[in-house]
Amino acid sequence: MRDQVLTSVSAPELQPAMDANLAAYWAEYGRAKGCAMQQSPDVLWFYTGVPHPLFNGVQAAVLKVTDGQRVLESLGAHIAARGAPAMWWIGPRSNPDALQTMLVQHGLEPLGEIPGMALDLASLAGEPAVLADFTVKRVENAQQQALWARIAATGTGFSADATAALEQLEATLNDARYKAQHRYLGYLHGKPVASSALVLDAGVAGIYAVATLAEARNRGIGRFMTELPLHEARQLGYRVGILQASTMGYSIYQKLGFRDVCAYRVFLQSS
Image 1 (tube, rainbow, N blue to C red):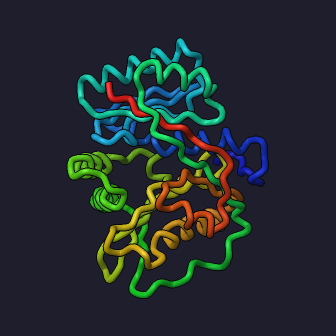
Image 2 (cartoon, rainbow, N blue to C red; image 1 turned 90 degrees about the horizontal axis):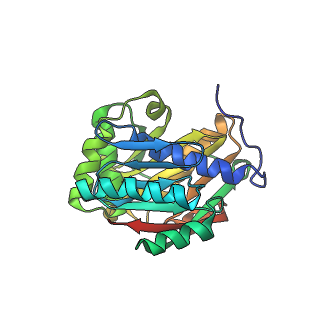
């Protein structure tokens, strides 16, 4: 049975749902072989060893300072062993004053804020406009998973080492919760150039990993890769779409009707 669908972007349950959906997406990487994860009602932290902080870190942190210290130490041990840094996401429910002070005192680097945005799916217009010579396919097997990871990482600007590590990791993911997520590859003239993902969890439709290769930008592809999953979610009965916006995608999401509802403050842990 799926979670009860959130019916409004003004519902008081929106922020907990956003945090839970975010955690659901990243938790799949922590469950992979060779990775580490701890999940409780108060925190999710995971460590994959992929040399990019997005793939090692803390979400859904509603912690006391003493509990935060234990998470810092656990992540620090993994960082010391494998070298990849980690990212802490501090949201409105994360007791931000105490946690932020603690993180800074322990030498973590503030990286700024990431907008959390929401959209009433009823406000979406008709089907996404057709783009010439552009098609989208759902990811269905390990080979496509690896390709999806390569496009998502390259389009986001990851290093070659991080891209290769993510590609290898993504191809191993195969549990039921991962398969319940939807991943999409966009093809221009038959060549893979774009990615996105849809997570239907905690009663909302979360959009992740929207990326387009540099040579295919400024054609409306990023917008298409965002809209298509949202339309699918609406057809499945979902009422609210959510995402965490990159600087590059922010204006696109605003044009689609997304509005800021919170901000996640992010911190880098490198030791």
